[in-house]
Image (cartoon, rainbow, N blue to C red; front, side, top):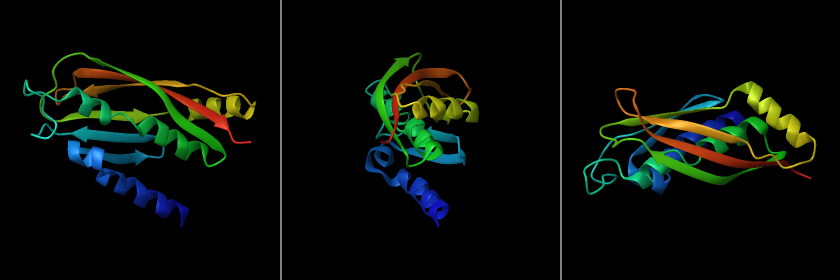
Length: 148
């Protein structure tokens, strides 16, 4: 039942208003990978006719945290701590980003957190245009700690 509920919640995140309004759609590839896409629409276009920077960031916001929360389970606290975005070139058309945390990295984070200290793992993802060129790079810093 837990896995079924989890899959339902993952599908429902596409209806979360900030994501839905920007036209952001996610699809879980596997337990450690989520692919997100956003088409260019009147609702996420800036004055220059390209993707609005806030929408580009929004499409990258929760995914590393959600992957790590699922992988570590309920015995751990996982929060977003900081983020930055670098715009590399204007984004047009449909853009995508694939969020992945390797099993080995998850095991390292779990081992460090099991030692009792807070962990602040960093992750990065490129937002790609339809030709596979990076239009933005997002870096995320998470906070992880084992619950007491």
